[in-house]
Image (cartoon, rainbow, N blue to C red):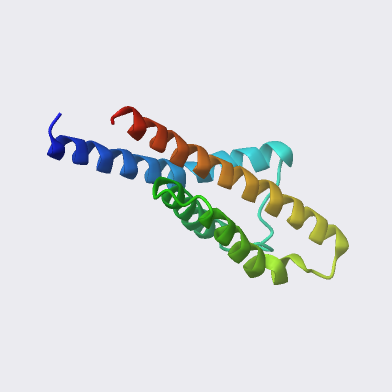
Length: 128
């Protein structure tokens, strides 16, 4: 295989992994959250979750593909600091439910992105 073909394949694998991580992860996480809490409707407590989730999964997959998985810790820290005020509601019941959704959703989302990035790295290693 010539160099140009190898580069084209690598770019395609990167783009596919980033698309799968960022776009396909949302429905997977939503399905998991609905399975855990049937009939749940977003009460607005954790706003912007869809876009934040996409960007987080993109950052995680990118960091793994770039060979810097330690950057996932930075993404997690930024999310925790950014969401902390919203998770500190006055009502203990609302806080507990929101915190549970936050933790489960975050872990599922991060795991999805890590798997997408990891599979892409593995696939690229087979091409070498």
